[in-house]
Amino acid sequence: MACSVYWRAPDGLATLLRGDSLEVLEQLPAASVDLVFADPPYFLSNGGSTCRGGRRAAVDKGRWDRSRGIEEDHAWNLRWLDGCRRVLRPHGTIWVSGTGHVIYSLGFAMQRLGFKLLNDITWEKPNPPPNLACRSFTHSTETLLWAARSSSSRHHFNYDMMRERNGGRQMKSVWRVTAPGKAEKVHGRHPTQKPVALLERILEASCPPGGVVLDPFNGSGTTAVAAVRCGHRYVGIERLVRYLELTRWRLLDERPSWAHGTGRDRPIGQSRNR
Image (cartoon, rainbow, N blue to C red; front, side):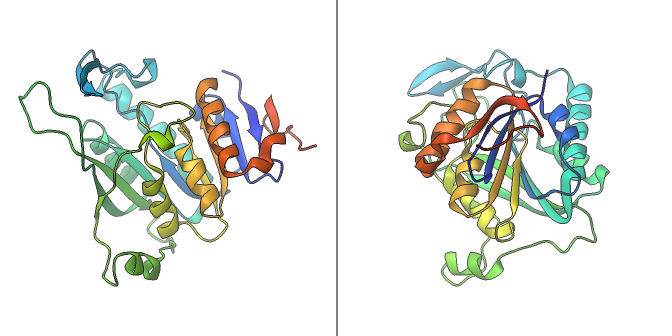
């Protein structure tokens, strides 16, 4: 698949790249990113069902979420994580989201590649969908792995802000954050959309002021919205045009002055603002 600049903000503070994550990561400059947030496929589209809006719905997010077997899935995780490590600056960090279906592969791959695990954050969802099979506990959490590029990295952590946000006490590793509501889905939906509040906390805690944030699985653009609100530069990678357009509209809600952004499938490195 060809890689291209789908859209870039007039001031260059946000860039959306269209293409396969593995291929686009290879084209990005080494040591150019301060923080990576990645919400990769969980490989859950296996013909099962869930509850959505009070009704039974098929678990089929798309071909991108279908497992190719644990060995191939793990090899793929190693490849994209290695690509992210290459573009991270020496003191940069990465956040990776997942459920129990994939998080152990991700954590093992990160350690194999030389990342230093800093925290495993539990995101608790106050109102999760019920377990329709009634054969196990209701899935109500996701895990966020936070890691530095290497054991020698002097990573950024805004301890004082996090303590202040937590009433003057150290913030713990269990975060109770409500899933995204209708206000975050006015331009469309994505099956694995994260709440902006979750990403804002991540960026406020661990991205240096004015840093570059990369999301190799851009999806609905929640990371992009949070990056803009927190004053960072953003780079997102996405294959599907409908999600690139969803992200662009969400960014225009944040910055109406970006209506004249450029790009639209120009080769990476050749898009120019006019």
